[in-house]
Length: 267
Image (tube, rainbow, N blue to C red):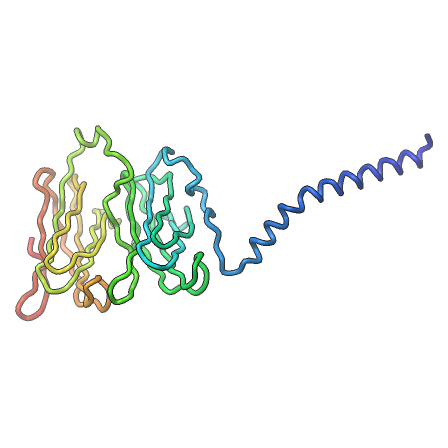
């Protein structure tokens, strides 16, 4: 067989192999093209720590429940502002993000969208201000108040059992806040270093407990008194108080209003 014939055969073989590889790759390329062409649609599972991961993986879990009638695109930021996870949560559904670690603070952001599937215009963009610290885990819900405004509510995490060592050796106490006024207040509890430990809405006459506080350092309790019952609307007052927490008896606080209309903490 001469040299020309051999080169021709090798050339034909190379072309056939290239055609075969192109045919195999075509469906994947089509899927990518289809996904990119869907403008204004964000796909669940962009983050590295999504639901596909084992719920028994080390680290804490952030669970987010959507209690509204709209879809919401969730984004979790780490202490340095980088995105850790993101995904779409449907109305009435819950989404979980795994492998988070207690000492660090994370920001939870919800972009509530006008259309289904986390598409269309963003009608509300709400975040946990300043970040939240995570111990066993974090439960957050997306709520809509009577006025139509959206807000994030933090709850005591129920997704993981308490460690036996915590029950025995780690002293913990409760900060109890009571609203003795005719207005709702948004409570934020900060640790000594300024990171948010807890936050949530307390309505007139209600009492709310913030648990698992201990240590020699103090905590700052902030009350933002609001015009609306759902802790939305105009802010009428913003007042803070530094407190120490007894590991056995905890600490009780109440928000009061004077005759002149001003508000104050009774501690």
